[in-house]
Image 1 (cartoon, rainbow, N blue to C red):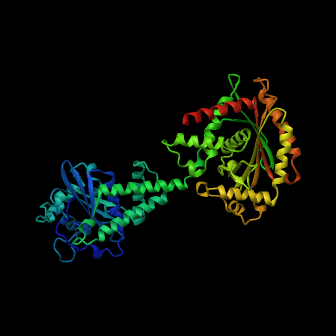
Image 2 (image 1 turned 60 degrees about the horizontal axis):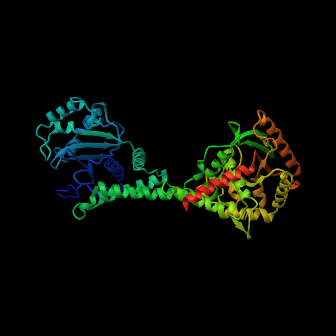
Image 3 (image 1 turned 90 degrees about the vertical axis):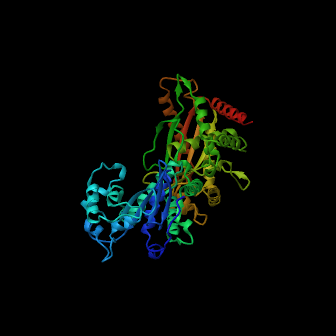
Length: 543
């Protein structure tokens, strides 16, 4: 650590009342120090406004930085920078810069201003490592040496040396400088493996500003150490702030922005705009004329953590705990009181809503007990469609074995009919309020948030409500296996099931949005066995 010599408060703290631009400049050099391991410390109001200390090839290099915020309509020109302060000898801006050279070792100089410079000074705007000498700065150095032949720094260096080692940096106003600094802070954070959001970057930047201010205003005689900002402790503190920011980001991160690629293929739909009741048919498809039940089971496993866990748990999935999290999700699935076929059906509906509707689920509803029982609606998703208000999709899902379609449709219609009541809708809303973690969801429209408020009438909820119904069924069209025209046969079958369902809808559902998803199966039994086998294998790995 370079120690401060010849302590004096002259021109320092007393002149800083209300003067903050210099703090932003100081932070720019603190950030430079944190990126550059050759820079060991940044000082505020010591030998100059700011001093940056480097160690290059075993030698110390002191960079003396003057910050000038003098207002004016014109650019800094030659006469202005060499003009003396009244009758005081050696009192020009450039004299003051060279006078700061008080320490042994190599010296560099920098002048930072809001205003730009005239053409005669533009050569100084080029960083030292990018100059090809002799250049315009060489000419300016010769002119200064001629005008001030006898003037040298305390380290016996003249204006020729100063010109070779001085940079003039134009930062503009404080807003421009702050923007440059926050960008540099963001890049530094990214290099350290952190990704703070803009609000967090601003908070960290404010801490750095405060650190610069404390260093600048500290008394050089009684608190000299406070005026020195060292690289290692500052870098350690920054890493701590960034890690804390990451932890806070996890608390508000949005886990539903990403999802597995779709597996099912939509083969038929009547989803024209304005339809209250519509359908969409999906196909598991064949591979080499074999039904892809095992691949579909594998795909459903990919959705298990998101289906079984809360958003606040999903955002904490990391490489070292991914296996444990998967085991936790399988355990939640396997320990549920809901019949296995219902759980698999709800999982399929979850995957469709996330893939097709880009929805955000209200997590774990399928496992939530209210008034001592599980809800008929295992899925609750928030759907945002372009040009439409945000919607709440309350889903019913069933696996329907051969011969059970009529009875299942009748049972679904009965559930829907009973749902359109203040008691049931209020109960469903309470469940959603209890489970929803809004910090982990995208912002929602006011009308949607109002509809979910427990003091709002259920009519508001009906205005944003849609019932997605999943019918995953043993298909007559697929019962004989692959056929060249099986897709066309499926389309006819899907339309017939949808038509049967809509004719049975109770009267009070006819003005409510209903979306029916139909997934024909060659064999529900095959899919269930394959899915259960995969779950068992994963559970055994955890044993």
